[in-house]
Image (cartoon, rainbow, N blue to C red; front, side, top):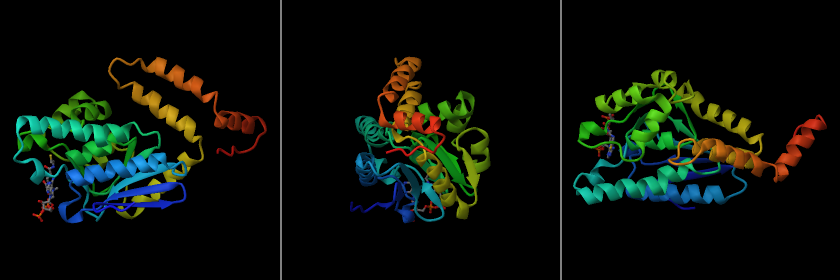
Length: 258
Ligand code: COA
C-alpha cells in the first residue's frame, strides 16, 4: 500500500497506522481521510492482522483536527456533505470494524482528531496529550460524530462543558472522565499499546468481533442491544474458536486460536 499522508506498518499480527502530516499537526484533509479509509479496509480484510494501532507522527500531535484550510469557504450544503461523507468513510467505518483499533494519542487530539480517537474502540494517551472539541470557537460544531460519541464516553454534562467552552483537557483529566483508559510517558506509549494488543491477540478474534458488534449495538438507534448480544452470543457457538477455547479449558491447556 502506497500512501502520501499516512504510513502503514505490519509486524506479525499487529498493524500500525500513522497519520503523517507533522507540519500540519496531522490535520485531516480529504486525501488523508480517503487514505485512512483504504488502509483500514485493507487491514480489516487481512486475516493475519489482529489489532490495529492508530497514531500521529511527530511528538506534538495525534491529530489537530479537520483541515480548516479545506472547508473555510464552504456553503451550507458543502458543510453537510463534508460531515456526512467523513462520518461514513472514516469515523463510522472505524467504529464498526471487526478488528480492534486502539487510538494511541501522542499529543493534541482536537476536533476531528479527538473525534477520530473516539471512533476507535478505545484510547490510550501520553502525558503531554491535550484533548478537546474546539469547533464552536470557529463558529461551527463537531461534525464527525463528536456531539454523539463524547457524551457516550464522558457523560452529557462534561461533554456539554467541553464543547461549549471549546477548551482542552489534559491527559490525566481525560483518564479521570473515561475518555482514555491509560496515561503514560511519551516513551512508554507505544510499548504500552503493544502490550495491550498482545493481550487482545491471545483471545479469539471471532469472539472479539462479535463482542464489538454487540457493544456497538447499545449505541445504535432503534436497535435492542440485548437482542444483538443474544444473536452474537449464539453465532460464537458455530465457530472453530469456540470449540478450541472450550476444549482447551477442559483439557487444562492454553487455546490455540486459528
Ligand atoms: N487545520 C489546518 N491546519 C492546521 C490545523 C488544522 N486543524 N491545526 C494546525 N494546523 C497547522 C497550522 O496552520 C500550522 O501551519 P503553518 O505552519 O503552515 O502555519 C501548523 O499546523 C502548526 O500549527 P501551529 O498553530 O503553528 O502550532 P501551535 O503549537 O502554535 O498550536 C494548536 C497548536 C493545536 C493549538 C493550533 O495549531 C490549533 O489551535 N489548531 C487548530 C485546532 C482546531 O481548531 N481544530 C479543530 C478543527 S475543526
